[in-house]
Length: 163
View 1 (cartoon, one colour):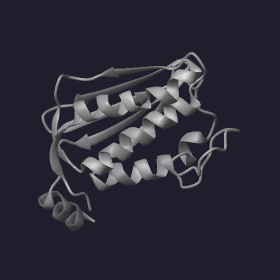
View 2 (cartoon, rainbow, N blue to C red):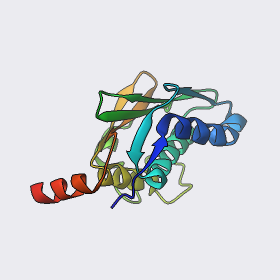
View 3 (cartoon, helix red, strand yellow):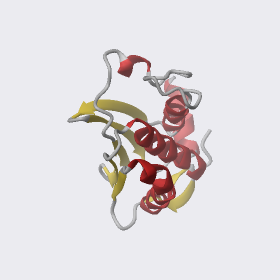
View 4 (tube, helix red, strand yellow):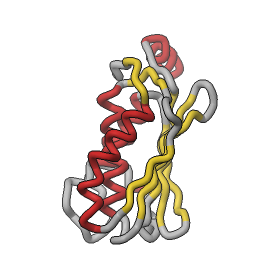
């Protein structure tokens, strides 16, 4: 179960993207952040760090040299936040969407890592009672995590009752 605290998601995203610039720079990949000045949330900060870091590092790993990774965070409405990470990977191979969130899935010839990042990301998103999806876009793909702005004990009991 998440252990939510109050924090600024926009600030967390900017900080994590700044930390990842050293991974992107040698390949000429530009990292961009589109976020409001502040975006207060009541979520599990550790899980959110994992979600953002895994998605950004995955985007850097699979983007073509000289490309760009854009991280967007915004409020969907009063109760939801959207985290989008768009890369320049060249697009998804056929059948990739069905398996990419499974543990140990590796989508191309680069076998560095264990193939767990997207599986961990999906579990962290779902622990917040959110969902994640991926879509092809021009010359790449975009991962979209749709999360509640707040989670707490009432949310956990509601999801248990509906299961």
